[in-house]
Amino acid sequence: MMRKKGKVKADAGSKRGVLQTQITTKTKPPKRVKAKEPAQPSASEDEEFADDEPTVDFSHRSDADAADNELNSEASEASGDDDFELEDKPEGEIRNDLASMSFEELHALKEKIGLKMYKEAVFGVDRKKSKQNFKRDNKNRPREQSAKHQVPVYREVFQVKKKVHQDPRFSSRAGDFDERVFRETYSFVQDIKAKEREELAEMIRNEKDPSRRKTLRGLLQKMQNQEASERIKSKKVELEKQYHKFLVGHKGTDKPLYLNKTEKRKIELAERFKELKKAGKLEKYLEKKRKKNVRKERKLLPALG
Image 1 (cartoon, helix red, strand yellow):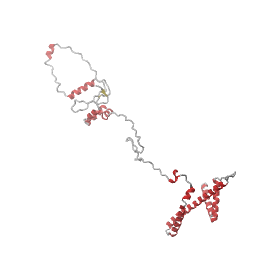
Image 2: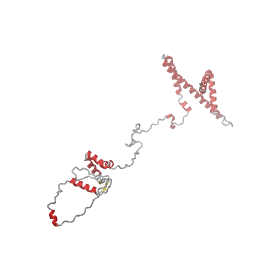
Image 3: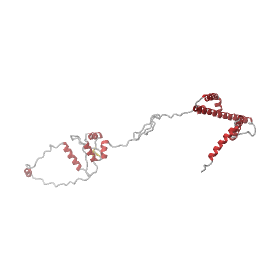
Image 4: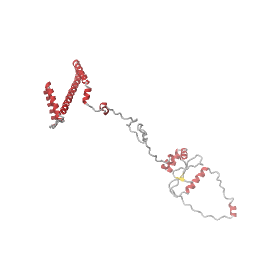
């Protein structure tokens, strides 16, 4: 019979089905001394000592004792091997035999054969599993997580496609933005704002609560500033139209006049000063501009002491 390391030999003839292990000691067994064969006695001597020889009956020996003697005889034939040999048996049968043993017997078995071989006998040989591929068949399915790794605290249980918020005003499908067309299309908004400004001024005159009146005045000032900026933009657009007409009128000349941004800025300021002078607000505007420039210069000065 083939013998294999790592298997447990069970005695089928024992009454309790207790697992028997064959263990060879590290020390070599004592050498057998072959005794000299005595001379064959004669027939007369056999008859003389026949009556005095005691008779031994081996019929009372149990199957378990016979199995123990068999194990001892096999152990004496081993040639000093340090490892133990276990009979080749199916793992299921070995586990059934181990299940019938008590905790004391299991502990004794573990002490004899060692923890490593005991785990192999009880739990089987640990074979390396093939690496699993957790790739999803469909990207919209939830990701499969391995049970070997700790799941992070913050994770997306269901992967939802990120919503991209788009403003239709800036979408490429709506075409390029043309400020002139936009102002002409939504020119009625300016009329609505003017009506709201008049209503707000009426509310301020009738309001008696100081805190409420202060809030309404802030809103009115905000609307007035927006209207002022809109007037400046309108003036700039008007100057662009005039400049475009000027270029078209001098298209056939040898030296057409082209203005850069700085020159355009100077023309815009000149036109603005003309409007302020007509309204009598030029001095106030220049004073405010001077104070603003002084504050800028003070910030650039190094700190003293």
